[in-house]
Image (tube, rainbow, N blue to C red; front, top):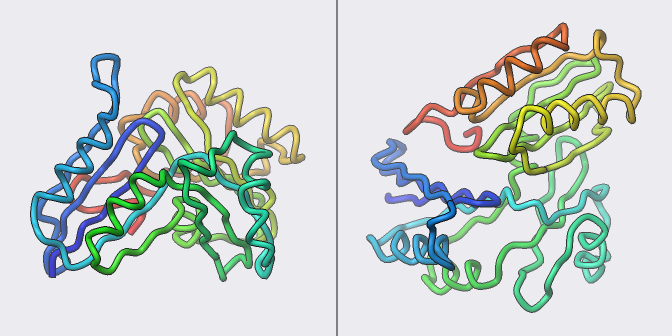
Length: 238
């Protein structure tokens, strides 16, 4: 069975092809100053036409989302709720829902409609998910105040957990160590987490973001790197 895994980030696309549970290919595509318009769309076309896939798994780390308690059913308000966090365009974005049963919360998020239609047109089984939900499912937590940070290329997502309850989730662009540290410290002050009583856990592209980690370790007492995204092995915390 050939399975295609796709991760969409704010400025990139990571694809991974698996055959019989073994990774046979992995590639990353990131937008830069020299990239043509619709660069990611072009890469997606090439990937989807490359070969026949039996199944596709799509994860969006795009930061158009909102967090609601499990059971909230007014789905028609999803776009309006997301609009409190980020501008949305109903004509160009597909409204999606991911439910996390472990913490009894659900994520409304949007995904580019053009990408959604390209993938669905293949008429094969497709599974869509939001990165926050997938990340949350991988977290092993205790009864402490905890900060869990998942790092991507120029981006991170962040959970604050206290006594097994989600206090905060955010997904933001990170372009400098100063931005990253300010975000972490500002968040701690707003939610009342003392820096010495809080346990920090880092995941994802920790090698690529080594300077972010080292700067954070200068300020926090309890810091653990859970794992790095090793090429051809881990894909968004599998």
